[in-house]
Length: 147
Image 1 (cartoon, rainbow, N blue to C red):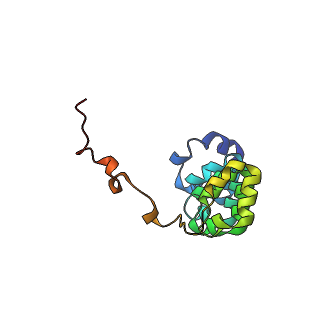
Image 2 (cartoon, helix red, strand yellow):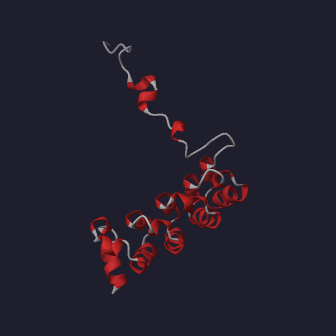
Image 3 (cartoon, rainbow, N blue to C red):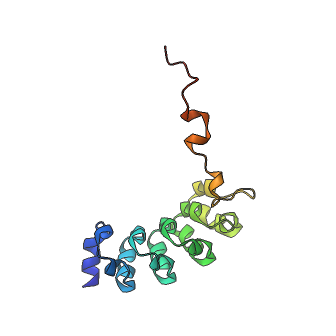
């Protein structure tokens, strides 16, 4: 019964009753079919090792929807990058610099190296993100558009 319901609700899961989205058995079935459905699980289940692992086995990019602590878990991040090397971009600060994690990500997809952090990068520090307001690109006062 849960599997039939899960298949029907994967794309409509956002509208699903909260009781289903917090039901571990149901969400395990759903993320087994589509790991990215983890984004619709309740907060507690996004931090549940079993649910997260099942989601990552199906789609490593589900790492972006996990609780922050899960992105610091070596085994879970390793599982994610083995499934999709680009999951490296969602790994916690230390793990996105870890040589083994980077190697596994690149084994899965050589292009994933671009997601690896350097020693001076801190991906989770909001001050590293440049917004349009931080640049002159958002301010057209000085540009001459009269051509």
